[in-house]
Image (cartoon, rainbow, N blue to C red; front, side, top):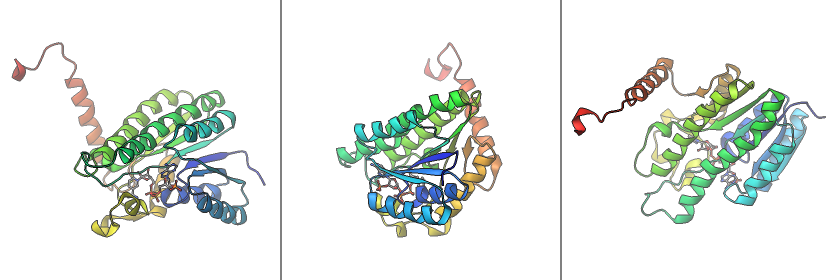
Length: 260
Ligand SMILES: NC(=O)c1ccc[n+]([C@@H]2O[C@H](COP(=O)([O-])OP(=O)(O)OC[C@H]3O[C@@H](n4cnc5c(N)ncnc54)[C@H](OP(=O)(O)O)[C@@H]3O)[C@@H](O)[C@H]2O)c1
């Protein structure tokens, strides 16, 4: 059976992306699942095919390679995609000076270049159809530049800033661009990053199911920025107000007196 709405999810082979796949299938979306591990994608597709009855396709692609990104761009341009979830991401737990060049470039390409290119590929069709949603999975590390995650935090700052700007552009076309910013979430992310999850305070971690369910409530609310773990909503409002005030304070033709 096929439905009229299709979601394309990157990084659907595990963790948060796999839960987005399960939840969107339960909401009746046909799915296109993207990642490198074909066996994991195939197993999830078979499970969802049986349990939910939606149509599920898998696309094996390495989103750190130009050809891998281009193959998914083509799908986004050619097909009627209702929801794009840019979820694939990596964050080697490493010092910037000593991490391998390959890890540094892969992190930037996957977290920034692929997300930007797939967003740009999805938008024109959504604008014409006057509907669509792009979910960009960022991180609260966007607010926390620190040791061992300088590059990762910077890529997630890009996700937040880029998503917010594009959201303003796309709003008038009826397209929602939502940045979802997880804090600690129990997935394979940490082991893949080269650090045991046991090194962190697990009492402040949520499950991937809790994270995605909160993200989807945020999507239903039309939120541009969703912070699933933040209880006090005024924290974000005050942060954003301070950001706007800081920007307003930069609008001067003269150097500040302390620099003269
Ligand atoms: N877990 C957390 O605490 C946490 C916190 C904040 C933000 N996040 C963000 O949440 C997102 C999902 O991470 P997760 O926690 O669910 O971790 P995860 O279980 O490690 O999932 C990462 C996903 O990205 C895919 N991926 C990695 N490299 C890829 C590549 N080169 N090409 C295509 N796909 C690739 C992986 O699939 P393959 O290996 O099969 O390719 C996997 O499906 C990431 O953007 C991450 O930054 C996670």
